[in-house]
Image (tube, rainbow, N blue to C red; front, side, top):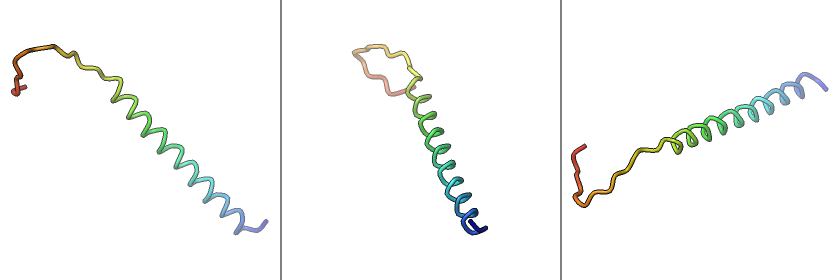
Length: 50
């Protein structure tokens, strides 16, 4: 294998690594957002001011 093949391996490896890191961060953010639960109170009157 010459330097060209070695360079291609580095590009492919870096691309796959970037995809894995990006997917992990997206799933981490989604999991964090879904774990936040806000208390909900039932009320007959709908209040729009918060």
